[in-house]
Image (cartoon, rainbow, N blue to C red; front, side, top):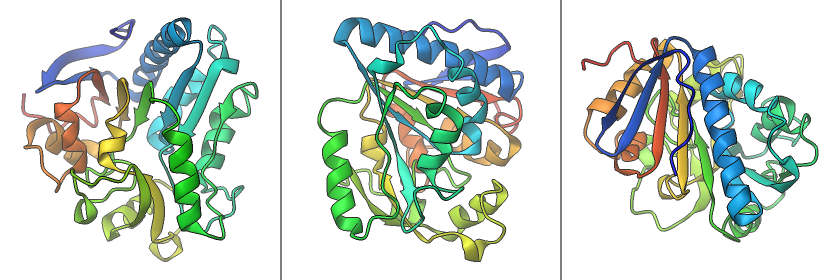
Length: 264
């Protein structure tokens, strides 16, 4: 099953190993075409299975995509079972920088019929929350994984110093490295590095690549260095998202800005 893109705004497409790369004129057209393609997959999975299980990334890189997806009324949202891939440890659930609140504000408050399962970032026992959320994620296969990629090339909150492609965990607690803390400031999530929580709930890299369909949205010049490493570099734990090169049915959606350092 291949997503049905319209191709509006598409500059070029190519592959890096198994990874399908699609470059767009700008992030708005990237988000628009991806929302069309994801809605198409959602409908086809619902027709086949009666429901669709999805995991969403929570980051400014997803804003354009989510803005278009929330307007899709051609999807039966009551058959959507949605999760998210990471969240800070210790933030109130309704904190403006809570990743679950991010998705509520941009998608699920517009689709109240959808089944959204947030990570409890305020859980008194983080280890128990890991067990609870892992159990929910593993109740059935994940059909669609929506990813972002960090400035350091991280996936979810698996930063390079803590990346292990052979990690047997699916969902875990992980520390955040300094580059990721700085990115949260670049993204406008926090005013200064000292404000950023230093530990997070996160899917592992293997978990991020476990879905039947994977689509990553990575616009802006801030991500150009990471995109060059992911697309043109080797598969290495120093760049966790480089593992996408080995994923079947995976699409990397970039714009001219994030593609600006590519040599091909």
